[in-house]
Image (cartoon, rainbow, N blue to C red; front, side, top):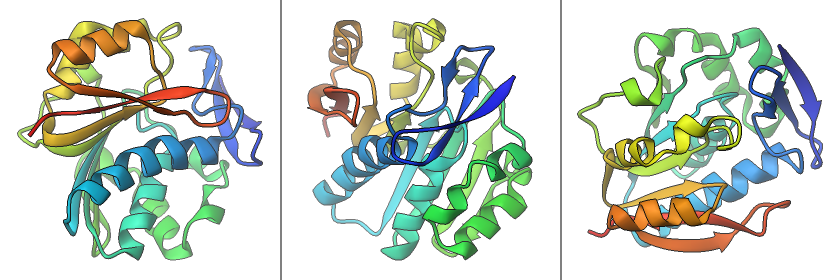
Amino acid sequence: MLQLVMTGDGSRTIYNSEVGENYHSRHGALQESRHVFLKSGLEYFLAANRTNRVSVLEVGFGTGLNFLLTAEYCIGNQIDLKYTGIEAHPLSPEMIVQTGYDQYIKPETWESFIQNYPDPLTAPIQTDQFCELQIANCRLSDFVSPEKYDVIYFDAFASIHQPEMWTAEAIAHTVSFLKPGGVFVTYAITGDLKRMMKSLAMKVEKAPGAPGKREMLRAVRPA
């Protein structure tokens, strides 16, 4: 069962009773997405690499909020974005509409996304001249791609609710899609996760967390 929940910053998230967790932080869905994924991931990568194109892989596409904010940023800065989201259990368009995320982006970005939302499950869509989206409707363990990505957003449910997403095998499989010089970000930080990253020769950094969390993890694959 899915239920809309108001978060601390006035934005909405969705509670999944089968998993026992929200899709975003109760302290603020919007500010968590902006801080963890946009600022600490995308903008961090772009600041370190002078480029007008970027590719993003998101593990846990969920409500689409991370994509929408990323697309809005790239469209506004004329950066070509290729975005792939992995989602084993896609939400319905009707459920996503109820989040009200259209108020945080330009109308044309929202309309292009929501009108074409069912289609990315089978083929890429061009949401803007600068932005291409594809949603892989599969489990992380079943995801295969010849593509390597500049930035990985790891936004799976917490390990206490979805432990299979945080195993050494799952993390290694995810990191295998990251380019040299690429950035991996997630809202979580644990000793096990840091050790996994270091075993994969990743440069690990504790970054300031979003409201409600003191720290988060950012890791860079050495060039």
